[in-house]
Image (tube, rainbow, N blue to C red; front, top):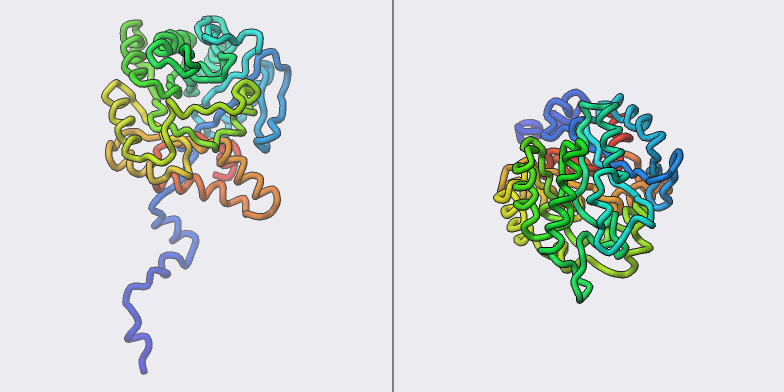
Length: 330
């Protein structure tokens, strides 16, 4: 019996046989251009602080921030997302410190843009860093977030951040109608080229735990949830409706958050709208993988593999705490 004559003429292993061939036929490639590094900065901090629940991630004082960013830029990273930890004494129920044109975050933005004018600086529009209750907006008499009252503050916050020099405004609050109001405010105040990156499909996920530690909001937030304004983890059609609304209201880029648990949502959003689509590999995803890597349960290659899965699902760019680490490898 001539086995070779009966064997299928197509052998898919042929193009897997050598590293060069595998690279040549790769359907998805991960590059440094795909990576955005989130950075935590802390008011009145000198030097750095470790974040226990996020291995290898630190909070930075403004005195060492430029050194860290210089290293990121030298690795080819073109964008950072900046998250502030402000002094507790400056927090209140209304989050009014967010409207201070000389607050800690605006000072950081100006410092970064002065030293690294070509770096793309992304900043969130949301009140949770500034409120004593830890919610993303202002509360009504029932201690629920008041959508329409919050919009007015969020609009003013967006203008403060644009004036400070932010390149990308990222509403992460999930209030209905906030993209339209912010876009109109930016247009009316001659910030026409400011990009809006909408956290369009942001789920009320339990994967955010380490982030709350990083921004020191866990002690304020306690056991509360954001279920009345962030999306239920069970829904995908609602995510498509959220994205459609934000695009219609003026978003330039849309984002799905978290990442790995919502790859189906990411793919659905990209397939449906074919818009620039980002994904956020959130703190819980990062810490979960890093903890397994540190214990030797998983190879360090799983981090890169997870990022490739985002690209395969349709992501154009990835916010990931591993950006610096992966950039070194690439």
